[in-house]
Image (cartoon, rainbow, N blue to C red; front, side, top):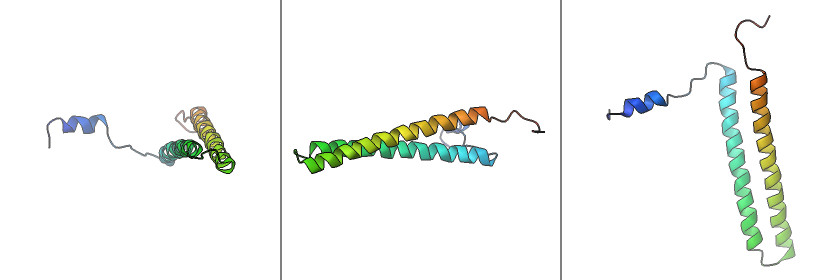
Length: 99
């Protein structure tokens, strides 16, 4: 192995999914970040469409609508992220049996 490579792998080990909650938490993070990326992409696409509409009212309305819905989608994604983090903190297992 390359010298120093062992230190990298020790510092960043592969994630360990000990239960279903850990797996779902990891998947939820991936899905939320992907949704945020898609919403940001739609904002850029709407802005490009708006710039290239050349004053055509129909094209301007489509671009405005695309930007509006992308911003709404981005807000929904961020709210979902915040709510999921809040719920994860509230229902954090404290160890031991629940009864």
